[in-house]
Length: 481
Image 1 (cartoon, rainbow, N blue to C red):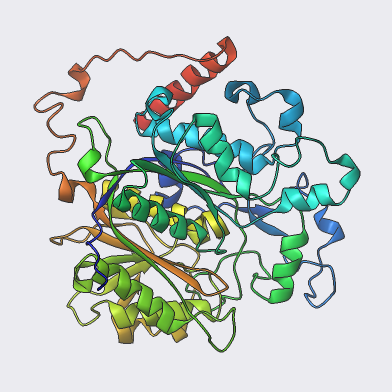
Image 2 (image 1 turned 90 degrees about the horizontal axis):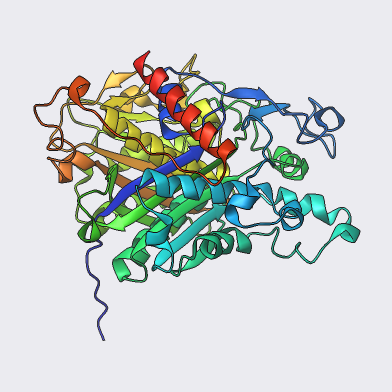
């Protein structure tokens, strides 16, 4: 029987939430950080591990790390309102902070989408979680005598997705993916494929990356992939590796045909694709042909022209080998002979390389850029890497905030690849391209000052209620400054 396939249909992104370095606890705070060109670089918090015991500027020394910084979430990553999620204190003690924060960020993602817990409970909602770090497992394994009956469900990759599905009673597929740094775009691809296949009616795509112990730092130092300065020098001549970053983030997706009038569509996922480099000169060597192939595959699968894209949010890790290969692959795909150069950028100099969560961070940045009609800058560039051959390829790095180009189609490509050769690509369109009247018909011809709204609040306890009200008031005050 001949193989046939239907063209994947566009998927609506209707909810987004994140916790990222630089005190970012919402997508609006992320936009402020990006638009103002800020870096969230810091020293490794002493609450994570004793940095001084492992740091050595000589990366050849065994058991050491050559950088003492990175991009970290602020505050105590262990803090968690366990009672809100029906967890007792004893069980919570054995739960990986990645699990804890994923529950909170998924709840916030549902809030962002305007979805109630009653709506998703018992529904065919898929859960696709990206994860790369197992630091909490490493910590517990140092003393097996501390293992408890809650340990098996407290840590390990499997339970990251299953805990979300269990807590919110989501009855669609529940999967954890690890393709290293491309994990969350792989998760996005699988979620979109499942939606198109009817395996689920909506989907959570989430990623978690918390740095809690030195083992992964040491391994990556020895592999030569980390920057000695702990900074992601993306596109810069000084690029020597990436700076590790933390993050917890989530997206909520629905099929376009399943949208309600009240669904807040943030952007449209036109297509996704994944592939592998196969056998190359080295398993960790980025593959130009593989990256070129996954980009072309993403566009061909949905019948889109490569000439219609104005901006590419690159993987852009800031490695001396990876950046030139990625830019060359991009130049082979997109039209670089137009009168206007192809624009590229990367979020990693702002919030570091979030590894498994990095793809979702790029998707959120791309969506916010389309919404605000501004491309935020790629920061920290002093001298562009000549190996990129940008002028020759008619490609330009966005180094200052600039308005979205005047084009017929507002479209962004997002690229990602893992160190083992797993490549992924996603194509995003502006929501208004597909829903022109969206948000314009509600308050047509009405001045904002004339609108009176009742804003009800609810919470499980008085303290939570008070904090919710204070957070909304603070956000409102900040928006008026």
